[in-house]
Image 1 (cartoon, rainbow, N blue to C red):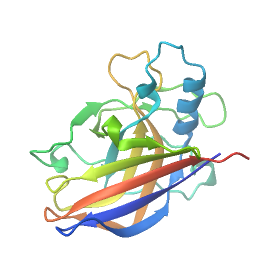
Image 2: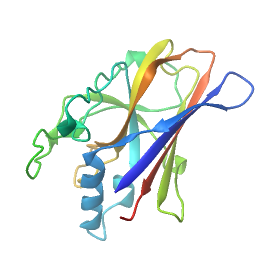
Image 3: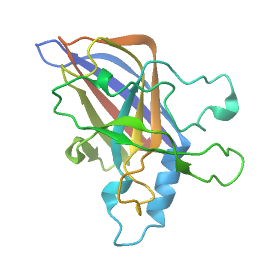
Length: 199
């Protein structure tokens, strides 16, 4: 079992200050990633199973159906390449994440349509000795200028491992109750923590 939270920090020039903290949703892609890791070959690259990308969105997933509360593989409405902004230090990639629509049997994963995902450097991912992983995501000043952010998705890098070009899968998701307006005057940091709970 997994639990997680997302803490949001804002910096307008005086250092990062906590502005929000709330639980996230760990989705089925996390279980799929862990299952693949447990059955991986010793020569497989461990980095492929770690969180590696994030995606910003301007809507939110509808949780009105209990059966889909964790069985989804995409953010509701990911932003376009141009909406991420220009002159970024963060690398934005066009990728084809894995999706599945089969909820009640063994899923068969296929590539989705093209998505624009932002890279998370490996040094921003840390593991603690209490089975918790922490991921720091930075939205620099030039990123998503004046975009009303409503959701963010976290992806593992390439969990099938055999692909030469990454095919990520959504592993955790956070929708915001209010739009998060990202202006060019501020930087944002999302500290995403996910913990494995022994039940």
